[in-house]
View 1: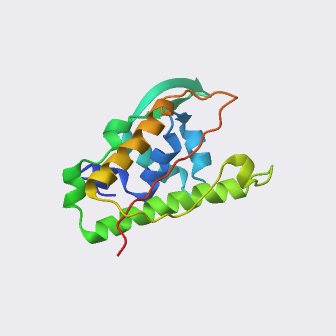
View 2 (view 1 turned 120 degrees about the vertical axis):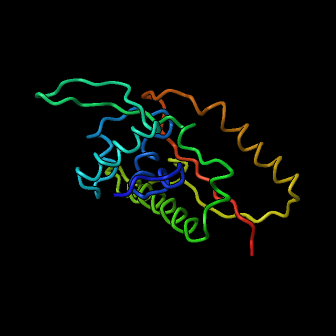
Length: 179
């Protein structure tokens, strides 16, 4: 595996993106727990990508304990280190954007598949699951206000700790101009 040259190469690889998505929401997971989130990834591949993300400062070790002679590490995401700068986004080729979007959508599909395969059944209304598309006509200024409104609405909840009363919910947005 070639060493990624920038944040885009680092985080937009399908396996690494899956690891990052699994840690969103302040989750702290061991390698074994990450492996449960990505059962299609072999252990050797998973360890290699976790190591790559840790060396890059995107993951941090937040705990470790000895289990049967081996050290089990617990990881957390350093969200600020995983974000792409505007310069990095602008320097990506069309093909790199296509690959990145495909990896992103594959992660969404993986999460949805896990949801519909739950043992306790699927109830979109009970679980607050929805997917829809809406078209709106906006100036750049209006779009900026809309985007800031989304951020302002979500930000107060972004650092909620996990608890038995809370359900981890993935809020995904995809915004693009219509052709």
